Image 1: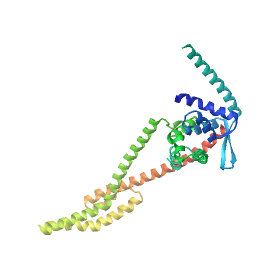
Image 2: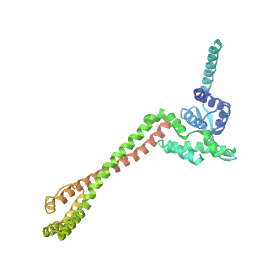
Image 3: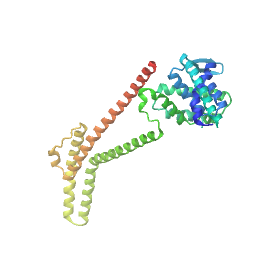
Image 4: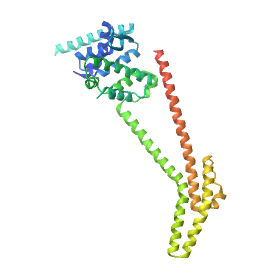
Length: 103
Length: 224
């Protein structure tokens, strides 16, 4: 799969997974990499950037199986951004499909 | 690659960032390794899935670029390599100069010994060949052993106090060769002390700068 597609869409995927429910880092990585082949290590820098920009917040939650885990949740701005990016994606996909239909 | 090697490499590539940020980043990957290993994955396969620590570090550095402090971090690979090579070249030329200065300073210690040896050689030649040679050898030896020692002692004391003053009286009593080397040596020792002081000052400034960057980083973080 084209690397440019993957890079562009990663933020949309992360935000969308989080709008469904709060998740910890490994969970996000596994969900995405089960469907798309990516360098899993690049998700954490993305998460850090999202936190710095105020789209997500983090909190620690105890786990039965070891040290507490860092959970990510969307902020209000994060939710708004996710809605906007989903719309952008749907518009983009339908535009591309429209051109392809003509060929 | 094992977990420790991966984390050490990542820490290395991140080294220009404040240490609180580095620790936070590393703890994220520690958590990832922990959970992945609980789920039965091996350290090596986790490392392969995560990808190159170098690329990951680049992503972090790129992400932090919007903060004013980090505008100057060259994250393009070529610019970074060029910076490293420039630093290497600078270090080489400074160490060459240092070596030359040390040699010159060392001559202060060696020159009386050298002339002592020369004096002995000439003395031996005189014994083997001509009496005048003996005379010359003795003439060279005696003043050096006595006066060169005194002249050297005074010169060392003077250079310790960083006084680059050439006292004519001392040098008149000594052979011209020793006086030449001694003046050069005192100059070299003086320059060495100066360079040492500059290096000390530079390292002090670097340490203060790092502390300042960390404080500014925390301050900027609160603003966003």
